[in-house]
Image (cartoon, rainbow, N blue to C red; front, side, top):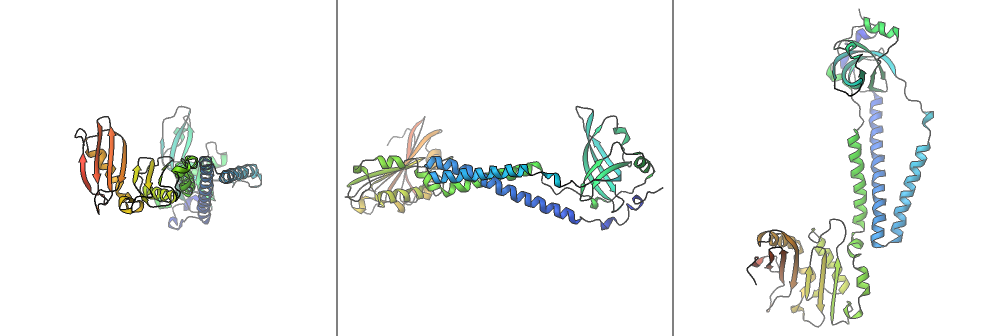
Length: 383
């Protein structure tokens, strides 16, 4: 004996399509993802602005970051107070469903999680498949078996939301006992378009970090020089970079999380900052360490006895440091330093010496202005 509406569950199954409401739900998910991305990025940027402002001592940046955070908090409070009472949730409808398969997992309570694969057969639309998980009392599990008929509640607007009615009315219990429902094909399986909780968390994290990184990049110049801005201002006039000085020296410290002068491009940018500070590109000595670069000069020296700051192959220096740390017998290098001085002799280019120090001792290698290694002194060789 068939049921009204359910007897046609096996017919016209190829016509089952995603209803327009599911497409609307996908659009809602996309808009929610965009909203979460924007809010997370702005929050990360605002917090980063507060930290950057403290480091570089910039009051306007601090006020901007704090103002953005206050606005976000106010928006959250206002949104939380909006009463959703005017929006009634969509009412569920009762239907019959064929149990295609079920699998129970162990639980620590009387209710155990059971995974069901169902063919839901509403009265007013073609049958479709769905996979759900629901907690069922141990006493009631024998009532559910493959190819059996169950009473379910589904949402027409969100057909993937299906709930087995464990205590149906007498009328629906009678209909379930008399119904015969054909299996819907696997092609009719409907799934929720919502993102998983893990995806939401990853999206929030990435957007937050991206917003913070953008703010840090915008203020990278001030952050790199903030460590010695006060020190430079406190230097006596005799060591300043005035054009009337016979000698000059200055240095800068690269600060910030996980920042090193070995990072690609940082050395050249720092050299440009020092050049602007001393107001000349010709110096007599350059010292580069992991987080510090220093230059010295003498305005009375001829150009042939100086080093031009921008002519050095800074992009090759990290490779020289890596080679010195791994090929000169220092198994656990604790520090490194690059010293650049003018070459001796007419037409000789700058001399680059990379020194590494560890518990085994000190070693160094020399290179020319093109980054080519010209000499090595491993640990214990002297020189």
